[in-house]
Length: 489
Image (tube, rainbow, N blue to C red; front, side, top):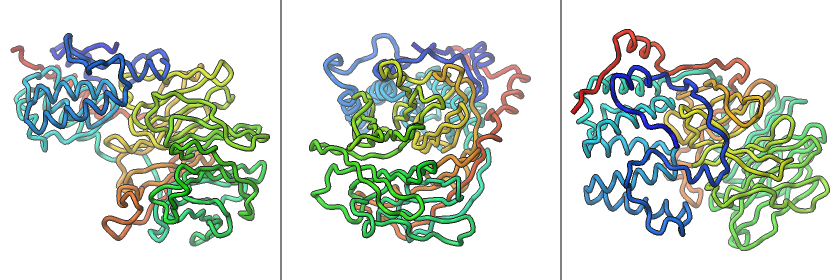
C-alpha cells in the first residue's frame, strides 16, 4: 500500500520534492499483484459489484460507464468514486489523475486534490491548471500557485534530440525502425502500405527495400530487427484495418518474416498458428543464439522463435496484460523486460520458471503510455507518448536488474514530438520516430484531415543524458520562503 500524504505545513515542506527525485524502490510484484494493487482509497469506498468474480477488464468497463453516467448527471461524488476505482485499476493513467484533481476540487476534498496534484508533479507530469475551471476552489490556497507553476514548467522542452531526416508523408504510417551497424543503413517499416524502406549514410532519400510484390506474405510492418551477425532482417508483420491490402481472410494472420539483410530476398516466413482470435506480432528482441522474441499487440502473449522452430510458439503471458508494446532482453539474457501500455514495466526471469514481476520503481516515476522499450548498457530506454508531456527516459537498473535505481530525461516535450512511438538503438544513441500518423487516420487507414505531416526521425544520445529535476529552482525558492500552507478548516 502506498503511503498517503497529509496536506499540512510538514507535508508541504517535506513532501514537495522535485519531480523525478527517487524514493526507495518498491519490491517487485507479479503482474497479477501489480494490477490488483489498490491506490489511495478512503475507508468504506464503494467497490465494484461482485469484484472477486470479475476480471480487471470487466471492472474497468463498469467504472468507465459509471463515470460517464455520473459526469453527465453532474453527480460529482459518484464521478469521484468511479474515478478513484479507475485510478486503482490504471494508476499511471494521466487522464484519471487529472480528472480526480477536478473531482476532488468540485466535492470540497481539498487535501485529496492537492495530494493528487503533488503526485502528478512528482512524476514529472504537466498541466495548465489555470485553464481548468473545475479547480477554482483551490486557487485561494498558497500551495496552488506553487504546484500550478511547477506543473506548467513541466511542459517546457528539455533534453536533446536532433533531426536525422524526415519520412515523407507519401509513406503513410511509418511504425518501425532498424539500424544496420555494419553499413549505417536505416530501415523503415510502414503500416499503411506494408513497405520496408532503406536509406544509406550518403543517400538523399529512401528507396523501397521490400514490398508485398517481391515478398509474399508481407503486410503491415510493426517492427524490424537487423541481425548483422547472420545477415538477416527480421520483420514483424500482420493484417490490420489500416493496411491498404487488408482482406477478411487475413483476419488474425501475423508472422515473422526473415529477409536477406543485403538484398531483401525472402528467406523464411514463420506464421503464428491461427486460433480464431486476433493476433499481431510487434516489438522484437533477439538473443545471441538467434532466438527471436516477439510481443503480441492484440493478445497478452510473448512468442518465441528459436532457430530450429517452424512457427513462433507462445512463450510467456498473463491475462492481466492489457496492451503489450516494447520488449527488451537483459544483457545476460536472464530477464525479458516487457512494456504494457496501461500497466507499465514488467520482467520475466527466463531461467527461473519464467516467473513474471512488476519492475520495482519509485513512486515518483510514472510508467504509463510506453511504446518503445530498449536495453542499453544496464539501462532501459523508454518512449512515452501516453503521458503529458511526452518524453524519452533512460532508466538505470540496480545490480539485480529488477528495480530502477536512477533515471535521466533524454528528451521531453520537444517541438518535433507528435506522439513519438518506436525506434532502435544505434551505438550510444537512440534513433526514433518523433511523430506518428495513427491519430490522423481512421480505422480503415484513410486520412481524416489531409494532408498527413512528414514524420521526423530523431537521434538522442543515451550515454550523454543528464539527470533533470523538473522545477528544481522553484522548489529551492519554495524552501527558502518557508513553504506553502493550506489553512486548516
